[in-house]
Length: 116
Length: 110
Image (spheres, chains in turn green, yellow):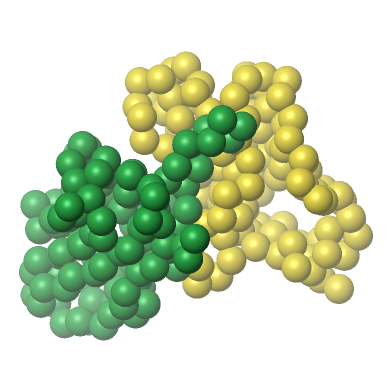
């Protein structure tokens, strides 16, 4: 168990550019989540995969955001035509179910996006 | 609408000074209430899951309790390494996804 890995850790981009983030979940976990977090707030749900199927997207999520999880392994989150309001920490989590604790999310360290 | 409110926003304590953090929630049918700890620059780390009113969970200096309207995270004789933001989240029957509070930033001074 090497934990959830996210790359890059930091990304600075100019407004209007496209960016892509990668998440490598814990290998035996079949569920994968993307969240966005701004300073002083809790994580905000973006989207969720079970294996390779994207089962849910936030209704608030702009069409500029897209996520994939080919073959149910790693996942990518792409933001097209970035805006300054997209600046945030993007967190990935994978999960497993435990009898005593229920579903337990394991988070990566996130990708901090700054849009100039 | 499912909602989670945490208080206070920030709490400064002296080492050894016990206190409690509050998580008030509104949810249609609670499936679970979760506590996570988040250190600066890192993702949240799981602490506890509570499922029903009256349930309690303990881990080292932390104890989480649950009623029908709120949860408390009690910290006993805290140490500086307990400094972090503590996040609360709920999962309701009508919405599978977790609804998160804004967190309480806890600072323990030596």
